[in-house]
Length: 313
Image (cartoon, helix red, strand yellow):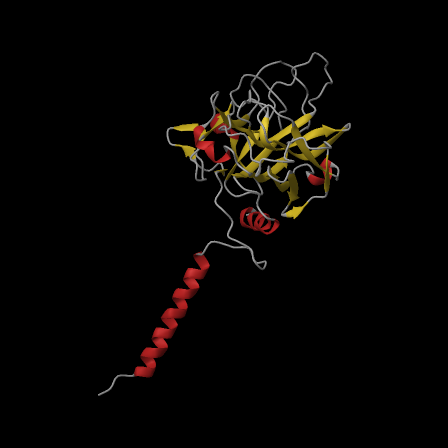
């Protein structure tokens, strides 16, 4: 007697459809715009859910470089629960605003001869820095390094990659707030050549509109060391802005081509302030941060929107 071949065909079709749906459900997300490419994996990424086993004052890298960072001064207590983000986030803050010291809570890594695991940024032609930020206190902070009781820092540190000759402050690629022409601005600040001139791209909008108090905001900054172009994004969308320094501060015009960052390993990463080696306080941020990522290419607008949607929880 012949079997029910039509029934077997229907069963096979159903199994094939189920398999297709499962594969699609767990496939990595891609941009939806025509010609969009898969978002590359970050060189370094931190979600503050992965302490080093046996050493909770350090955070494991979820990127491809394996660059462990320190939760400076705050240690394990710097991982806090948040009412809007899942799991734990990083808390950074100034501890003693009237005392010159180095007890501010921040994060990062520092190597006086460079950090070898960050070699992807050695002679890199492009970079992207991005993450989620929430202003939780009084920013900018009081300047603990000056005697004036009402003096404040002229910058608020978010996240960046140090240059190859940095003493813990100078950067290759940085997302932060600095004073531009007397006004605090959200900026992308980059330095192509170690100890060379930096260039700044500042958002036009008032920084309080971009980063209102107690509000999670996704920021991204892109750097193209070959073309000299920088850009800023808020919640996946470009921020109108302007270049602060005129001329050619990165010295990209003329031969040889292409242009790239200095052929040195960065001396580290700084998060929530300067000097991750904890030698002094500098530009502390009273903030919460989450899903910080550092890429060795300038992500496209479609890729940045994809990362915003993927990480917004």
